Length: 370
Image (cartoon, helix red, strand yellow):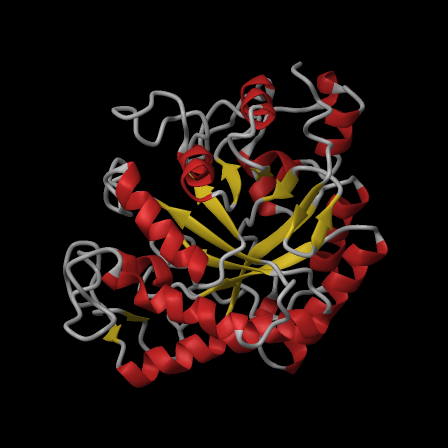
């Protein structure tokens, strides 16, 4: 095993001091009936804090728009009962010495494969109401809808700080609403929220970030999760070159982003092999902006999350590759998903070098709150 010391070195994210470089990646769990996180959800996150995870990012949690979520048991981040549930979560995590941020979410027009027969109380909404195939499947958002959605993100961030959370993350990846505005085939708008360039189509995200910055304190961390690919094409790129990526990320940083959480199926895959055969997306983000970069994608496992969703197990693997990159300061933090979902003690086992006690990932773990 490479130098474990770098994994357990402290890090400062805006005003937030982190005890180590490990982040629990956000993972949808669907254990919040009626949108309300239960005591079991609070205990689930507390167990990760008790085992030393540096920063926990919660599962995606819906802002105050009627069609923000696409399953019945996903948590909300608005209303008296859901916010009381989240207050229990944050208090339990802090009591265990942890740090936690909620991931704020709006799914846009993206349906859930797990709850294909369920529909929200109003039609799905998105930039142009289009599916990946170009069919009209939902409600094209009016400028009033967009303004209310921006306000809902800001209100959720303000509520997060009021409840005692340590920051927020915006889900701008994986084909959900913010990401849909970035994508040219889904955003066909002719107003100020559309455009022929990625920078023009970023206005929605920029206004969300600025609105959040206007209602939270300056030291409150704001993380933005991004991915490059299109839902219909895993090889696609939003930013085709490092220069385009630099322009895009710096605009988002100027709007208020403290950290970029750069999602790719496998962290070891280069983002621009024709320009540099080694740097992944987080590596490029750090190189181009200097902003805190979080890498994610099959850390500690042999196969990506999509194969796990398809029912396949994943063998555990060495952390040498990701630790070597961390030691070279290619990125700052490492987000870990499935290993921490399956085993709350995963990080302590790594710290104590009990590698033989770390199991392969099995999809059955997705069905429980262990």
